[in-house]
Length: 459
Image (cartoon, rainbow, N blue to C red; front, side, top):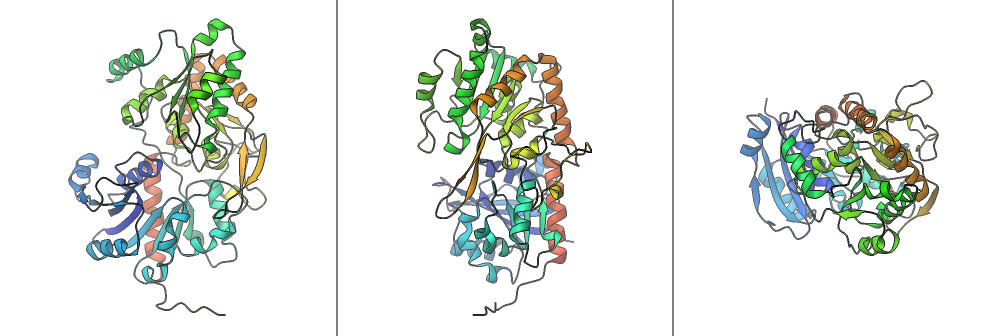
């Protein structure tokens, strides 16, 4: 039987955005089951209008002899004319789109046309409550909604509560991290010498404890608050101890969507070591080096769909400090009173988020920071959403917790996190993500029914 072909609409999987990274992972981990075609987006794509056949390269990487992957490059996420052209050339069996629903208005306007011949699938996420009721028409345009976080799974179910949606149509498929790319580098590893040299070339000689940050310099990430937290943490140390610490920021130092972090450091934290990686893009190997060098990786964003940086850190065996919000909750391994892990089904209308601290027992690899205040923000297109903001003093205490822990215990905690992520029940490995994609998409193909040629709207 021939393989089903899926047309993916998302960031070009050869790029380095979070959307591109995850697109690459689920394609690579499901190419044994499906053929993939991508309308690959980028801002001002340098290869716009070109098509790249990656099949041979991916056959070598995966060992899948009949792997089929093509990318049609486009500046932006597409339009009806471009989509119809690709459909006419490739004849896909389904469409899968990925990222914020606001980018896909033109696609949802075509849903009646498209769903007569193929299912429309969505790898979806929403950062926070209250339930985004305005997304209901978007969700209703889709035959399968695979939700990236436990909280999103409940949000989508609640928004569609009064609609005729089956359990197989709303599923929990968390992001998965490649354990072969992100791993602890030990002295017996083949790459240890290169890693040691990289570490020597990158860090001041006296550095012993690194707080690593790998995310964008945008407002919701609260990078300035992390700098202030680090300063407050260092204030608790002696001058000699503080000299051995380093806040290492892998981000653009200046961004119009964020702030001038260099000015923030110069004014608020001039007396303590802070460095930028000075690289906008690094190889996966180098990124794994950074995680291995770090004592912890931190993310205190007030809205966060998932948070790839801290997830990669845990897979590399390095503990984390995170705000308890959005998809970051899924990385914490929160447990209920009976000592079992929270599942997607535990999130309900009565328990919409753990941001308010109902459950505090969590994995040894994380020191969670619960929001000190939840404010309701919004815009014209997204009228309301909670902004979960941590207190910088609480974050400083979380950093101090890890600093005071012996390095051997910290390493052991990080390894416990890697083991948790590798567990197929928790599903935070790339292999598990691929398996979930295969299972849910095949179920959709099996149970999907074409839309009627004409949609009757009663007035």
